[in-house]
Length: 71
Image 1 (cartoon, rainbow, N blue to C red):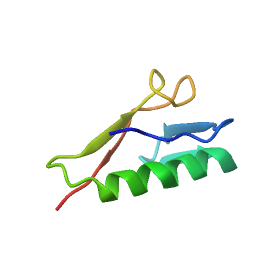
Image 2: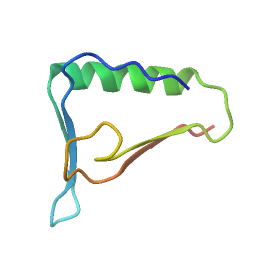
Image 3: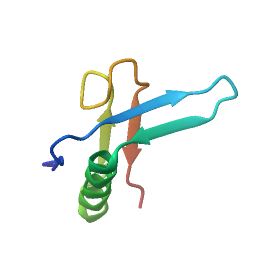
């Protein structure tokens, strides 16, 4: 699955003490996430999912974020 990122994207994910998950992104980050969601929605592969973390596209210190398509 090929992901399309908008130049200048900035995305971070953190988990608050109360368990809330906060995904913060600039305009380019939100557009990139929209493209990722569309790509995932159109993927017919069984178990299609995307892993994002500080080593793969998210800001340093971000929590791991997995987006999974279910049937």
